[in-house]
Image (cartoon, rainbow, N blue to C red; front, side, top):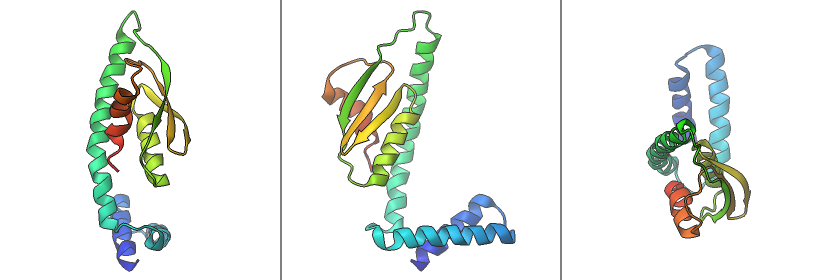
Length: 148
């Protein structure tokens, strides 16, 4: 737990870029709380968690850029070629934090919004539903982000 606290505190200092006493106190409290909460309950080491989310970041950024371009094309088209729909897909993620990250990544990607999550089911509103094949949608939406 001490190692996690030190690492988190150093990250805090790096992100705030301040050695002000109040900033250091708040950083120490937040770092300690996070290290304490995840110290015993988290099965993975902090390094493994960081690597896991570092793998996710480029995939999310790529998907974000691609979907922004696609939505821009739709919006700029005079005929507004959309086919909205709601799909129910499944996730294999077990960790609630990973499910939350998945739902937020889907929502932050233009053209999709996570409407509800019930267990392993995720209900997603899609701006331009190109297919009704669940396997294709599962690969395009869920499997893309499910590297966690």
